[in-house]
Length: 446
Length: 170
Image 1 (tube, rainbow over the protein chains, first blue to last red):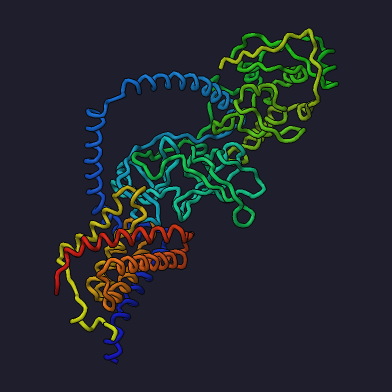
Image 2 (image 1 turned 30 degrees about the vertical axis):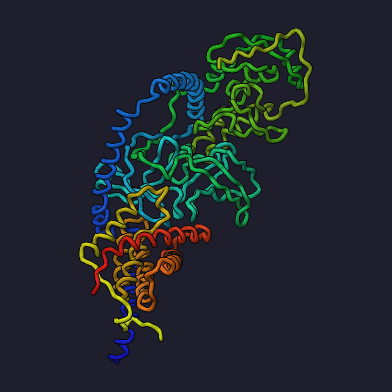
C-alpha cells in the first residue's frame, strides 16, 4: 500500500488539489446569487494590486500633463481657431436639435411616455484590467465610497462601455460589452430592430437575435434599447460593420463599438437614473391641436366646396403658405386634402413631421408606413413635413410603447387624439397643380 | 535510456530565493493587469512564469502548487468565479514540471514548443471548466488561440532567458 502511495504520490496530490478547486468552484456556482461568498478574498487581492496601479497611473498622468501643459503647445493657436469654428457649427446644430427635442417632449407627454434620463454620474479613471485575454474587464478608481453600485452602467462620451460587476470600497470591476459573458439590450437606430449585444472570443462585438429576413446594412447605428434595465435607452453603442447569415434563423451582425474599448482612460458611471414623464414647456395638459397650431402654417379660409371636392377626388391643391409662421420649420407644399382635415381634427399628429422617437432619434429614422407600402421618411426630417403619409405617424408613435413597454397610458392617449378615418388613405397618384396658387415657399430656417 | 526525474545527476534541478519565488509571480500578475490592454492582453505572463518555475524546479508537486497559487491569484482579479485559472494552471504546472524532469528544455527551440503546447493545454482546460462547470457561454477561436499561443511562446523564450539569471543550483 505504501509503495503504491509513494509511487503515485504526485498524481494523488494533483488530483487532491484539483478536487479542492473543483469543490470550491462548485460552491461558488451553486451560490452564485450570493456574491458575498468570495468577496473578502477578492478584496484582499484587489487591495494588494490596485494601490500600485493607482500610483503608476498618477505618475503617468503627471508626466503626461507636464508634457502637454508646458512643452507640447505647438499648434494650439490653429487648433483653437478650428475649435471655435466647430463650436459655431455645433451651435447651429444645437438650435435645430433643441427644436426637435422640444417637439419630441411634447409628443411624448401627449402619449404619456416615460423617459429615462441620466440624473447623476461619477467620473472615474481606468487603472487596470482583469489581466486576461479570455475575459474583458477593467478596474476603475471609484468604488462604493463614491456611490458606485452593482449593475450600474459605465459609459464614455463616445458610447457605452460596460456594467459594474463587482464593487470594492475604492475600486470597481467593470465587465465590458465585448466580454463573452456580457449581454446588452440594443437596437438598430434606423429600423428599430432589437437584439442582444454580445462579445466574441476575439474581443469583437456582435448583435444577436435579429431575424435573418430583416434588412440590416453596414454603417447603421446601434443604440441601447433599455431592455436590459441597465443602460438607458438611446445611448450610442456602435456601428454595424458586417452582416452575414448566422446560426439558425438569425443574422450575424458585427458591430464596431462606439467607445474605443482598448484605449479607455476615463469613464462615467451612471449612478442615478430618473424615470419620468416628459414635461411639455407650456405646462398642464397639452393638446395635439396646440402643437399643430405651433408647428403648422395657418390655413387660409377657403371655399368649402374646394376642399370637399379635393378631398373627394384626392386632388392636391397647394395651399398658400405664409412666409413666416411661429415655430414653423419647413414649408413644403401642403395639400389641401390634408389641411381641412387638420382643421377639423386638429389633434391628429399625423400631419407635418414624423415625430421623433422618444430617444431623440432623427425623425428620418422612423419607418413610415403608408397604404402604398413601406417607405422611409426623408433623412433630414425637415423636408418631409406635410408629405409624410398620414398613417405613418400614429403607426410610428404607437409602436414605441411596445418597444419600451413602460407606457400603459399610451393607448389611451392615442385614443384621446383620434385620427380621422380619412387619414388612413391618401391619394398617391399625381395631381395637377392649380395654376392660381402660389408655390409653397421653402422657408426652412435651417 | 530515458531520463527520469529520479536521475538527479543527469538533470539539473534549480531553486530560487524567496523574494524571487514570491516577487516574480506578483510582478507578472501586476503587469498583466496594468499594462495597456490593446497591446498586452494577448499575453499571459502568469502562465509563462508558471511554466518557467515548473520546468526549472522539475518537481511536480512544487510545479502544481505554484500553478495553483498563481492561477487562483489571477482568478481573484478577474470577473469570473475563482478556480478556473487555478485548475488550468495547476494542470500546466504539473505537466511542465513532469516534462522538465524528463526532457532538456534549456534551449530556445524546445522552450518555444513547450510554451506553445502548454498554452493550448491551458486554454483547453480553461474552456472545459468554464463551459462544463460554470456554464459560461465562451466560444473558442482557433485563429485567436494559435495567434496568442505563438505570441506567448515567443515572449516566453525571451522571458525565460531573463529569469534564468535568478536560478540557483541546488
